[in-house]
Every structure is written in C-alpha cells, then in structure tokens.
Image (cartoon, rainbow, N blue to C red; front, side, top):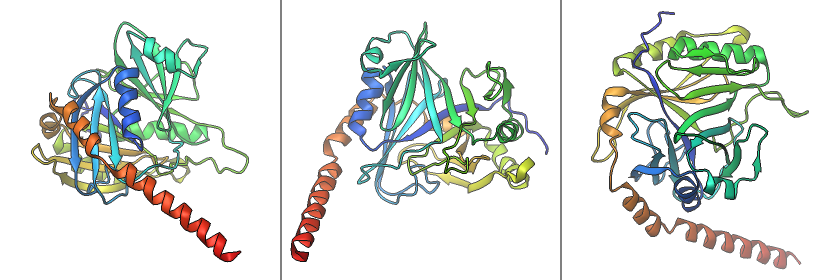
Length: 320
C-alpha cells in the first residue's frame, strides 16, 4: 500500500445514538460538565447514514469541553420517533478527565479499582477520572474475540489511517494515537458467551468514530480500503463512497464512510471544510432547548403504545 502523510490527521468525535434526548443532555451538561457546542436539525435522513438507517427527521448535537477544531468531542444523534435502540457491544466505554468529579461521583454506580468512576446513560458507559484537565481522552472499542484479529485490526488503523500503536500496559489491547493528538483509541478483544461466535454485536445503537484528514486524501483512502485485506480473510469495507454532505446554512463537507475489520463504522471527513462547519455556535444551547420543547414525538410514541396495548387486550377479550 502507498502510505499517505498523516501529520494533518486527527480524531474528531464519536457518534452516539440517543433515544432519550432530555436525559442525555442533562447527563453530559450537568454530570460530565460538557458544553453544547452546536446543534443542527435535519428534516430527512443523512445520505451517509450519520443518524443510522433512518429516513425521518433527526438532530445532531455536538458536546464537549472546548471547540471542535482543537478538542475531541461527542456527537449525539437523535431520531424523532425512535424511542429505543438495541444495545450495542461495539463500544465498551468512553473515558473522561474531570477537574470536578462531584456530580459524577453522586451518580456513579461503582468506583473501579483504579479509582475511576463508572457511569452510564442511554445504554453507553463512561469512566471519569479526577484530573487537572477537562478532556475526553479515550474511546475503547471491542474488536472481537481473537487477539490475532486484534493485531490485524491495529494494523488496519496504522496502514489506512496512519495511527501509531503505543504501549498501554496490556498486551491484549491495541492503543492507537496520532502523535500530536491526546485522544487514544483502544481496541480490546472480549470473551464471547457460550453460544457466541466471537463477532461484535453492533445492534441498532452502534456508533461511529470520525477522523479529519485533508480532503485531497479521501479518494486515495477509499482506494486503499478497496484494495486492503488482512490475515484470516479480514477485509475493511466502504459503506458510503466519497460524497458531499450539506448542512443548512453551513459548510458542505466531503466524507467517506468505511468499516474496519470488526465492522466499526469510521467517518473520514475533509478537514478544510469541516473547520468551517464545526465553528462553535453561541446560540446552540438555546436552539437545542427550543427543539426539545417543541418535540412531541415521545408523547406520540406513548400514545401509540397505549393504543397497541388496548388493541392487544381487545384481541384477547374477543378470543375469549
């Protein structure tokens, strides 16, 4: 493979599908102390399935500890009318450094042996470590059962995305970084259940890792993915070929969506236009608050469930 210069690459964000938007926003703002950086509403599903395989109205909320062009953040996608997702096994946890852990300690379900606090929200797990900085520092993904597969998995990130493997104190885990980026991507094999084949069960709540790279590199990365194959027959996939995505009133960005050897989705974004798109919006919190106040989809879903329950009861009564 012809390697690309990756000094301008960096990890951007991880995408979480949020079924209960109110609970999620309260958690990220008031428990983890993050800020709403921008909020966008869309009338139809994303051409690159940013919101998953859903065609209807959805929203995107970026939260984090600082501007997107300098910090790794989280993207919360909310699909109107979808009240739950099948829990995913693809992401194990997200690790956060916090100056003030008071709020996190109050809702943590346990304190781990390393002193980190374990929390959960909307089916996702978080670890909070008291520190002198506020930072999202690690995303840990499950990469399948075999350690040999994990080694090939790490090789994929090194060859295609130009990341570097570093020692993280556990030979079973692969830890990958960009030299000037504090975010660490960790890949860990996990033990399957007795009836399991060892593959990662992505469910409908699967996420997506986003990386920025020069826009001119996107066609070559797409070609590299098409050509790549690894020991054991593992191959990455192109999920969405190079496409331009519009955001109303904001910059258009070029993206390629791929899947790694365990099926984890990766969004590769042209850095130049993304720098314009990701500018912090001082009105984002107000826009999000307004959108949540006007959102009647949960009431509609509750009414629909009540009607279905009543219909089922009526069917039973008719059968008797």
